[in-house]
Image (cartoon, rainbow, N blue to C red; front, top):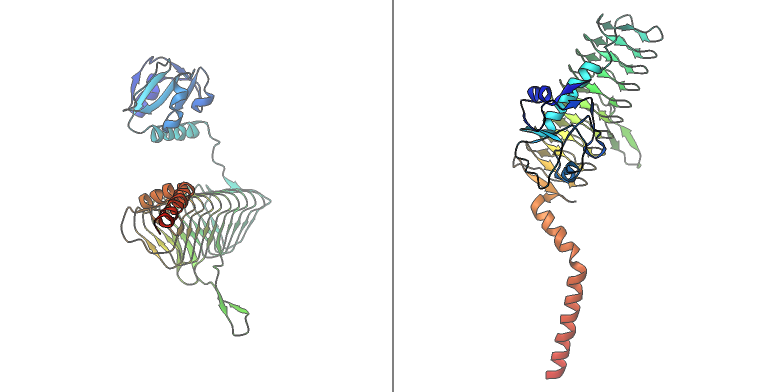
Length: 349
């Protein structure tokens, strides 16, 4: 790949500050850039690298103001991060491997399964009875697809994924390695003798279009009905999504988060890593949960930001952190005041 700054600016509808003929042949992080690198800065912490960077071109926000001199060419855009993502998508489309077609001989496809002729089934994969595999679906080696599973067009399933019976996967979905979809929900009824009866989990999982699911994530099937992941949701690695959970469209959830049964998340929520959410509550659209927060109550107000464990209003929690850090000094002051008060009392008694 070899392009000029002017060509990139045209693709991004950006404006150039510097040399429009600067040559680019690779993408790089700003701190690792070479003389023909294309980089971007969206996070202010990386701005200092710009002033010494040999990069050919750096994509920045249109309102970026430099505090020192620099030699690289800038392309100013509305949103630097979104623009760079757009470029990487174009690059992947141009340079990525072509989609495969056909069924490799070491795989098993049941007689009653329907696999579109444009789909690819990798070696040692197992496609169960009644499964339906859509157009241009890419199923990597060592994938298990259960009975009556439906996978819509252009979905990509990476190695070692298991999708249990009756689950539905939409179009343009990406599921990364090791993920399990449709395993039993955690349902056990306690008995008088202290043992437990397993509650059969007879529902399924429905994953709508344009969802991406990271590696080693587990999404449990519903006890009855469906566990639903709505369109545009992005799930990180190592998540636990329990039975009958519903995740609203375009919600993003970071790694090691756990969501308990029957909880409903609204659209466009943002959940930080290692958050824990109890069961049978509802989170309003646009809820933002800070990393390592524990959420135990329904959130009704859209756009609410919360933090802490138990989680509460984000701004209040930040103020509490400031007070908490000052506790040792505050204790010293209290001890001194008590000593002075005691001395005054003794003096006047």
